[in-house]
Amino acid sequence: MSRTPTETRPSRIAPLAKLPVFFGLSGRRVILAGGSEAAAWKAELLAAAGAKVEVYAEHFCDELSELAADVTQGQITLHHRPWSIDIFPHAALAICATENDAEAWAFRCAAQSAGIPCNVVDRPAFCDFNFGGIVNRSPLIIGISTDGAAPVFGQAIRAKLEAILPKGFSRWADAARAWRPSVQALGLSFQGRRRFWERFTEQALARPDEMPNDSLRDVLVDQSRNETSAPETGHVMLVGAGPGDPELLTLKALRALQSADIVLYDDLVSRDVLDFARREAKTMLVGKTGHGPSCKQEDINRLMVAFALQGKRVVRLKSGDPMIFGRASEEIEACRAAGVSIEVIPGITTAQGVASRLTRSLTHRKTARRLQFMTGHDHSGQLPDDIDWNAIADPKATTVVYMPGKTLATLSDAVLRHGLPPDIPALAVFNATRPDERVIEATIATLPDELAKAAIKGPVIVIFGNAVGYTQEVVLTGDQSQPATEISELEGVPVRPRARKGNS
Image 1 (tube, rainbow, N blue to C red):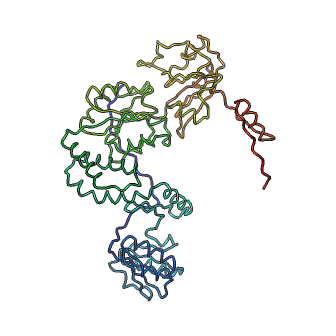
Image 2 (tube, rainbow, N blue to C red; image 1 turned 60 degrees about the horizontal axis):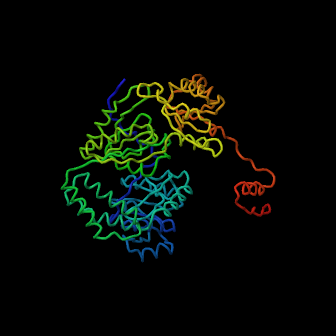
Image 3 (cartoon, rainbow, N blue to C red; image 1 turned 135 degrees about the horizontal axis):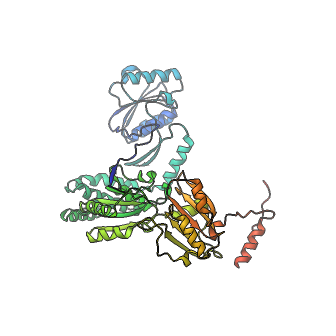
């Protein structure tokens, strides 16, 4: 059965506890009630955003008084009197820092009546918006919120991001703001502008601590001008999506998805992985399923090339690794024949995902010195007729069989006839690395019957060989320094046992 490529919609955004927004406050009035240290911190934050902060209280802490005298951004004005209803008109925001619940509620009602968003410090129920943690690389700003559920957790994330993000990103973000008018004036196409900023971003990530200068801008502009004068050309990327777990996606694959105009994906690609594509990208299912409805490979090739010739960045997204039973060679040949540039971004193949999830090595220095991959069916859905059975029946090898759902019984009978011991360990994994993963363990002789009894649906991979049977854990007992000495003697490397510390 055949089917045609189908455009799909991106998944809906998951529910948000709060909508993250960034207020533009430069030159705008913000009302702040309270004279405490909590009020001082809010005043400093608001002034840093360029607001004209009007603070109302009968008494002000020293920090707030010093801040009003020293602030260089925005403006802080201290009013030595309580707040009143007449101060609210034309304010952008209203913030209250008081320990009195009745006053806090009255302030919130007054702000609401004036149509002004309100925040009452440490009283989430009175707030229209909340202040989150901030990582400041302005104009690059990151806000962090747990909606009050775990403030310490949010603080830890902020500290982690502070450590990761170079301080120099601030200079690059400033340069982007300064250069944007000249880039807009070039009259580039959308793709041309996008490529300019992609190159800019590559430079920023590679050299975050350097000062972006006009010479760099001129180089990037010249490259964009040259591209504008040349015909618009697209590009194809064959991208490995991994076996299913989105955390197994490589960084390079993630960047490809976030730069794509078109994503052509297979049925086996996890929806969680597909969600990493930028939301503006068009996603199309060009699924190929074993023994089920499938798009013709010729149609996929034509579609991929046609989009690229329109100047689009095309990601051909494949489960696992595109170069392992992914028909990548046909798609590469189609692109080359059409003069379309193509690159391959590898992914973690399903066998590696299974091995890592089950903590089973696919090789073993004594019992499995060779690893071999094979497909479980040919173009007709039957077991291929040109298999080297002597190699597959080698007890010193680990064999990985992709997509053997309909042919496993025939394969098992054949390897047993060719001398593979019937007690060789074997396992079948359905939906590898995904939440609904199922594992069936048996021997190469009994696995087909076990699969038939389980009647599980979904993509399956089979691995057999002595290596996959090693599941025992080493348990240290008694003097724990002794095993380290024994291991070192086996390996021929002297290791001095560590001295034991007394109990605390």
